[in-house]
Image (cartoon, rainbow, N blue to C red):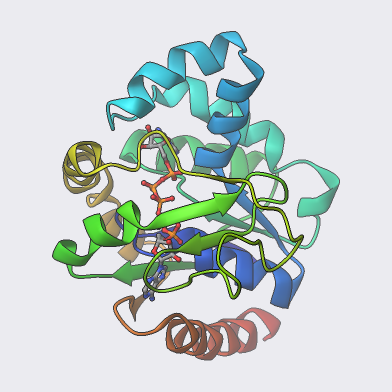
Length: 222
Ligand code: AP5
């Protein structure tokens, strides 16, 4: 099963795709996480990407497509993958179609998280994660159970993303509207596109996704 998650910054793509990965045993692929790993490693790609990411702009299609092409051929993608943050432009979607055609594979469903834009800046400003194990939290919707202590590994070290500030969110939203929203009509012509109420509590969003996944599984097993 191959899934694409679409939605503006802070919509809950990462939160829900990690849950899907755990439930269905298919690999979550976040191009944002891949780029942040390159930035951390100080690679050439990372240095070029950092300036763009910090400004809330997209990195060039050529940079991201080749990374993605290699990633979906890793052994952990044998049962399928969840694309979190890719594609983000029609050019990326066309390139993905070409790669999947070569690999004799396809996208089974596009999940679209619909959210009220006014809520996104607050969600993003509240997001933080454990510096040791990466578990993610939110000041408002998902605080740690014990103050300043990671629920998963007990660490007291937390980090916030460099692009998680209100100024950059506006630019990320503008990129989403201009570059990524045209993917909706692109995919509606080709594949099942399912819309999800991303303003519901996290558990309710997961339940909506479960229902859609059951429908898609029935179709793909026929
Ligand atoms: P990326 O890392 O993909 O960031 P994004 O798309 O801006 O999305 P976010 O990670 O901010 O949000 P999310 O939807 O995953 O929300 P989350 O689940 O964390 O990309 C970063 C940058 O990398 C881009 O700006 C670009 O520069 C570059 N890039 C990446 N991919 C690229 C590509 N393909 N092409 C070009 N450039 C690329 O949730 C957010 C918060 O809200 C969390 O704290 C969470 O706990 C909380 N939350 C989630 N769901 C709910 C809910 N239902 N109710 C209340 N709170 C909730």
